[in-house]
Length: 148
Image (cartoon, rainbow, N blue to C red; front, side, top):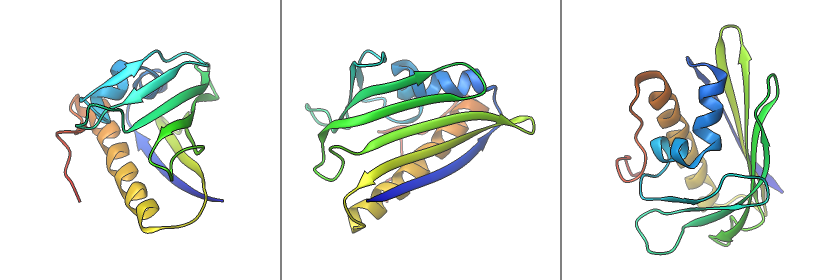
């Protein structure tokens, strides 16, 4: 199995960072304004829309830990691109030296591929959108994102 990892430091309180990755409203500020549908509760599902009538990904919420110091959001992909199904996504949020650090993982890829490289670049872009949203109030979620 192959994993994607990214780390980003954000000048915002850990509670706000956690809310931005744990709630549908927060996710729509930095990942996709086209739609985050569902309830962010352990065991429920979230559908993420990117310009199509069907969700591009459906994630089952597997973990929501809001208490310091180990804030964590975990998802398992249950529908979407074949390479995503059965992978897991995690956001570990912690305070470190006066800033908040997000350690992101998209784990369990069957193999390295061009699509995986594309997704890694897109995740990096959207994590910088998260940073921008929390530090300036403006993110660059889909469809306002740059495509590459």
